[in-house]
Image (cartoon, rainbow, N blue to C red; front, side, top):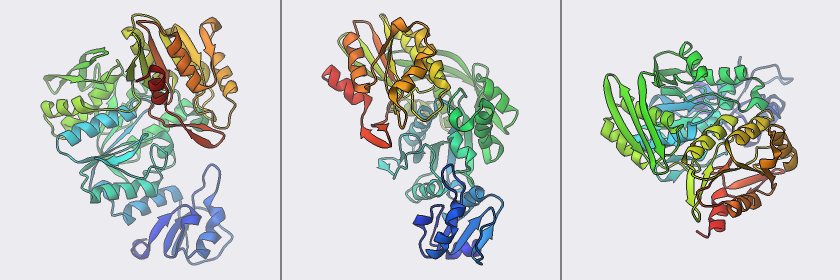
Length: 461
């Protein structure tokens, strides 16, 4: 393998990207099977072609392996100089909190002078430099290792990354070594892909059972986290009864205060982040900072500076507040609505939809959550993709008993403006589901759209 890599000019699992001297790895995907394109890759001048099953072609360049997904990760890691072994890599997985947690860690480390890259749902970046983003939280193996290598070349000492369940199931980060792996929580999402919560959990668990790492940080207050503790090695827990113990947490529209105990000492931290769920995101960030050898003061400075696009972003109206949040699962929606409920003096208005061609089972659950917590529910479109918006809305409605507290407006911009028009002094409007996203995907086309832009226009700010 090393002899082939020394001669290789590139690696790809897409036959159309193959050039003279490239290595082609045939991957069986959801829609296409790379084994059907072996002949094309050879014709384009592939130096070697890796397959995991028999193909009807005889060529000395074809190499049979047991698992081509793993082979792609190993090859990409070696081709790019094994960057994960030269960086302090932090991988965070879980249903909710990944984006906020990675931003907290990035800010804490960068503020302390540890140049740190970030890879996740919003972007891949190192300082002010934003790298080419392929639209996935965790990219394919080649993009993953090449981006780590590029960050390393450009001075990164550490990288913090969101690791999705899809990426773990598809071995997209194979060949990586981590300094820290972390688990936030698990609740229903992506069952269109994983089918069952058990499969979903086992995909997440792979980060802790199949990879090399120094520390596993696990949320001990999450029931799935409790199960994971027995499967991982070198575990450090955080939560109400964790190794890093949350003693107190207070949150208001002005920010949050966290008090923790770790290794016999007590610490207090302040953050501009709002919401009870931030107790866990901030605790994880504090714990990572301590494991990097930072002082409590250094950690506090980093926490104070963190900004997370589309996560409980607030906009003031005429006596009311509008919140934009990425919450798109029943659990995340419940958390953001409960936070808003405690902060509101008036009514709580929820504006949301659900993504098309995704887990249908969570739609009625989201409807039930909104009905139980909000005073008024405005149902609208999210990213309908190839589904009809009203069909998605009907699925959400099936979980709501009191239809009298529901307004249906399929056009998302109109729904947001309607909620703002209905708002009175003391009310809070939560616009959930899209957060930082700057598009709306309809019938395969991504149209420019951002919740915050619609809100600012409606509020004249």
